[in-house]
Length: 217
Image (cartoon, rainbow, N blue to C red; front, side, top):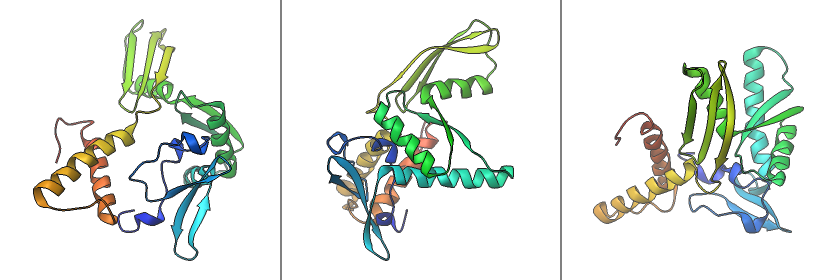
C-alpha cells in the first residue's frame, strides 16, 4: 500500500452490514463509498477499468479466501469450518454480512466468537492463572472481558466493547499528531498522495511497538 495506496481497500469490518447513513467515513481511506439504495459500495481505483465498485462483503471475502488458501496449503487438506471473531456489538445484519463474506470465500460452516471472549481464551492459553482467580482483560481496541478460572477452565462472566473505539482510532490520533509536527515544524504537507499512507503505516508500527515498550520513534 506504500506506493499504490489508491488501489487498495481495507477497514471492511467497520463498514460491513451497515447502511450508507451509518458509515463513519475515515479521512485516511484511499477509496470512496457510494450510496446504492441505502447500501454501501466501495469505489476502488483499478489499473484496467479506471475504478470498480465492490460490496464490503466482497472485500472481506478476499481476505478470508486468502487465509483459507494458505491454511489449506499448510495443513495439506481442504477446510470447510471457520471460527471468526467479531466485535461483541455486531448487529444481526453485520453478522449476516460477515457470514455471506465467509461463504463467498468458500467456508461452509461458520461459527462466530466475540473478540473479547477470544482475547480471554488466548490469554488463558498463554498464562498460568491460579484456580478461582477473577480476571479482567482489556483490549485497547475497545474490548473488555471479565472471567473466572474454575477447575482450570475459564468461565466468561461478562464482556462488552465500544464499536466506536478501535486500533484505527489510535492510528488516526498518532497520524494527526505527527502530521501537525511535520506541517508546522518542517513545513511538510502530506495530506495527499502516497506520503499520507507511508506516515499512516509508520503510525501503525509505533502503535504496535508501544504495546511492549514505553516509548517509540
